[in-house]
Length: 209
Image (cartoon, rainbow, N blue to C red; front, top):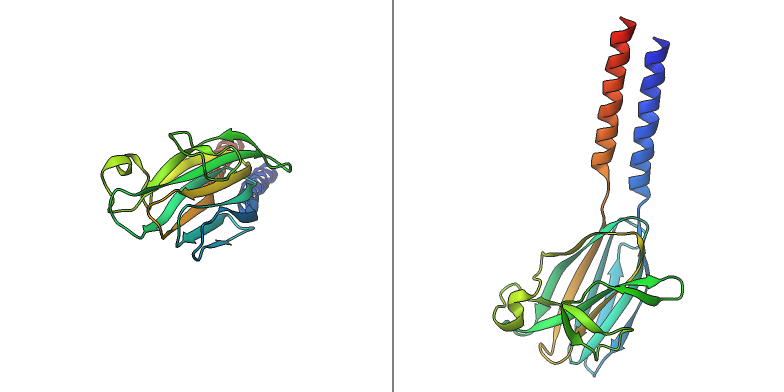
């Protein structure tokens, strides 16, 4: 009986430790700035800093336009395009940049967005290489190979400090964009651990019998 209780306590402690690790995962917003503006009303906002889900939004009413934010994730995370609302629904596209930074200096170590070389005038460190986003109803030209709202842009990126940038060179001359950053919570690992513990408990009961 004593060995059974011991095993049960061990399973509980190990499972709680995994859940605690998941719960402590967070994404910290480290600041944002306009890298390029040409008049009009522009805005940026971030919400969810210190939690496991951070949302960054930017809007512009004149182009060219560029903006970026820096953030740090304590766990692996996913990046998704939540929304992109251009002023015109055709084949227009805009660029986004994602880079791993050398914290706390903030220098770029790795550029993840390398599909196109359209963002050289973005005013962002290491600008040039970027990937494209477009509206949900857009098609034709580069829009055919661009991400649309709801798409997962990157999955399971390692913990660290990053820069997420957005750039529009000319058209659409106005619009808004929203990105979502969410930590990849390892809940399945907790369930596997609990299952393994219960299996061990069952075997110890057989031996006791």
